[in-house]
Amino acid sequence: MDFTLDAKQQELVNLAKEIAQKEIAPRALDIDKSGVMDPELLKILKQSGMTQLAVPKEYGGAGLDLLTGAMISEELAKGCAGTATVCAANSLASFPILFAGSDEQKKEYFDCLNNGGIACFALTEPGAGSDAGAVSCKAKKVDGGYVLNGTKCFITNAPICDKITLFANTRESGGIRGLTVFTVDRNTPGVSIGKEEDKMGIRASATSEIIFDDCFVPTSARIGREGMGFRIAMQTLETSRPVVGAISVGIAQAALENAIHYAHQRKQFGQKIASFEMVQEMIANMVTKTEAARALVYKACWLKMQGDKRASMFSAMSKCFASDTAMEVTTTAVQVMGGNGYSRENPNEKYMRDAKIMQIYEGTNQVQRLVIANEALY
Image (tube, rainbow, N blue to C red; front, side, top):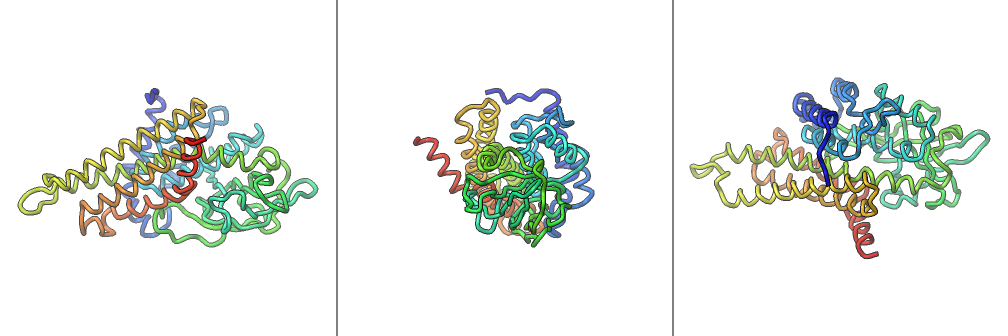
């Protein structure tokens, strides 16, 4: 496996690192406290191309491969995982159009993103999380298109979105065979943004309900055929899960570096705590697991890019292991720093809160383990 980047790819990764250090990190704690994304920072992300990572070259984008996109997400997450999530969610919402959209649909969608548009991926509902087949949002076929009715919840980027990649059911009886994908403009009559979530972590990322009330969309808004939605959703999530893994690695790396810096500064019993064997053991475990998580994420991306049949299992493993690692590393980093790590004035407390959602969204780690076991056994 070759993880070497060409000059253009490395330039974009370096740009993400610079933005994270100079623009994101200095704003991160203030944004976390307010729960509102800084408009100036969002403008910087758009202008730098960080919200268009999945746009192909033929539609005006950089045409990044999955590995480069994951590396960029990792760098952004070192500054703030919530900010990285805003950008990654644009890619998540783009994948169904990339996989199954027509040329006309791709052009319209990606033109919006290239012009600073924000997108969201609307699959989750109050009664449909891990069970995508339980989607109850309806798409009733009428002359010229469909009428949408239903509510989506926990939708990343919903309050600031311009485009919605919607999963709705075209069968009255529901089930995965009726799951169908649509692209919906935010300003379409019948679309409204519901309750915004006051979240534990990734607070830079706006999350809310989306309500569809007799919302008409033309047939041209349907992505692929009726009933293709479940397959498109699984293909999308298989592609995006290593990116969640990459954001998790970024969180872990940031917490690790903060803990190491603190261990060299903090003195107890007349010596730096970095010289204490128990602290060294904690640091050693944090370093090892972070590096292992990064390697697994990179391999998952590489296998997906090669079309390897093992990609599904490695995608699940990378997301599962990296997010568990982020939770463990951030918790340990707080322990290394003691009371200072528990303070809201210290970024490690934020890293720990941000890490938790990585074990939950885009498929809980319990579901990922089912995928891994199924792939390994059968």
